[in-house]
Picture 1 (cartoon, rainbow, N blue to C red):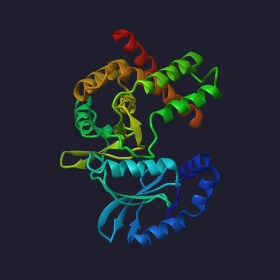
Picture 2 (cartoon, rainbow, N blue to C red):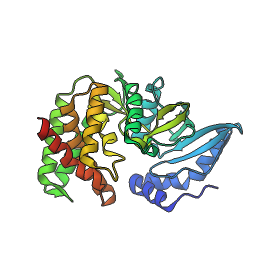
Picture 3 (spheres, rainbow, N blue to C red):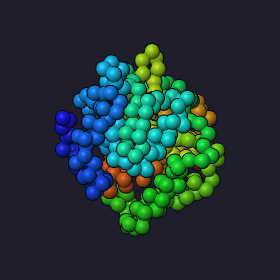
Length: 302
């Protein structure tokens, strides 16, 4: 029997409400059915956040990973994105069941995240190599949401908090919303994006290979997809210098539009801070500081 952490249980209930409570009640049965169906043994889980993720043994020997989610559209988008990205720098899908919220993946070993690479230049070199082989043209027919969904999320926040939210002033909110609308209207070539690309979703797969995990799936331009990466793993670093250096490198190596990176950076950092305030009542101080860094860099160059 697997004992789920109290915080994980609370998160599932808070996000998925009654559907989450039913999923938790049936969780042990779900695990038992998975073990029988795939002849697997579910081992002790990794640190849990929004989904149950654990290493497994298939047929008593093959190492893999199982991800169990309350069935929802975001999970479906992740599975579709992984299947679309099958020839790129992504973890491979072994099997899935959308109705049950089951995803079985290859296990990446040793599995250390890019955040464990303390040398910034070395980490950025790895990131560039991964990103050069990451994106692909957006599929013609897909249920994966576009960046317009992020604009709509910010629209909802603006309507709900017309005078601002926490440290996010009314002016910041309106500026970010205006930028989202303009950027979505003027996007160039659209790609299938990761949607949550950062240091903790890039794992060491051995033999000098790094692979990407946990895509949310998003349709839009590449400039938007690097923002979450820029915002992560900046603790203890000079934020202005670190962001400026990262942006310059990624713009050069990936042939990106620098002004659009800076505008997306400002607007997404506002949105991300608002999400945190809504969900948890707190926010990441580094994300918040980055808002003004993106704004100042845009003033500096444009």
